[in-house]
Length: 232
Image: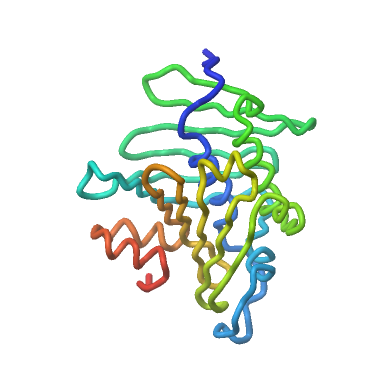
């Protein structure tokens, strides 16, 4: 059963996290001879480029002023092929979001939640989703020029511990999304912080950080884990 609502709410933040998480699994890229060597955004983009297939666990933390502790979701991101991205939530509820791209450059998103009818909508009805998909397609393929058409890119740190920030250039997207910050160690993307213009920040722990997060409960400890201040 399809949902014809042309403006699904909350999808830009979800898609940003989903697409970025598709870069999270470490692969056989060469390690730096000197892990203390300073990095730039070009180095980060090279190590984030990921061929399909891939999969990685995640722990997502959704902050809210109404909650004493962030809402915690856990599950797995999958990229079975170059045209498909899947986000499976396994706790505290079961939900699967699948984003597919067709040969003509279009695409659709399907959201399936246990006990409810599936909802499917074309990305063309939500332009900011299509722009995010195109932008992070460039990230996954290592196409810096294409990514820079959509974002201001900056990076800091060393090959041991680094941060890269994406600030949207497009006015419509910038009205909803302030920036996206990625934190990593070596060739592993370990955490994504998505900062909307309005509402609460979303933090997604990935790979080794997600595994460690299952044994960490305090908000300060989770922030430290995201930012690379707490060893796994």
